[in-house]
Image (cartoon, rainbow, N blue to C red):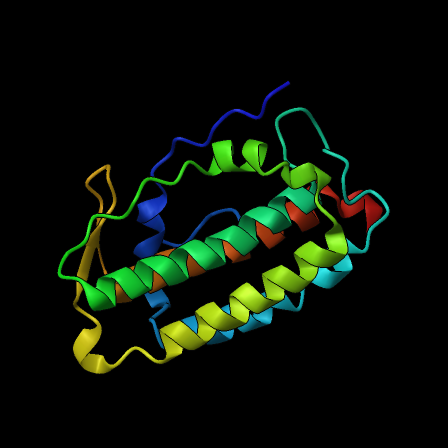
Length: 178
């Protein structure tokens, strides 16, 4: 059975604590984001080493491997979006259908060792990119195709929730296997 696409607009996490994973965008700034991203990376190797890394806990939930591949791609996508915002005035981001990408790139069939390495590399690149943002760049803007507007500062806070939430997802859905 196909995973139900996530069509929710998660931009609320910028100003409100997430009741699930506990990430609090209201107290997070872009200056916190590199540390959050780097800390999050340390949780993935253990998760990806599990014997059930490819197993979906139920038909509606990605496997640990699928979540990890998604987080790797989020790190890449947000680094690209940051670069666009810093090099263009108010760009509209190219559409990215994360659910279609998961199917097209066969997330569940990828090599966990490779995904772990690529996730780490992408996270470190993203952390450095957000760390290098200057104060005078924080208010530069970018738009999603759905009209959601971001500043560089708010994109950073929005982005950092994703890896945190998905590591929480993986730990919660596989708590019996830890």
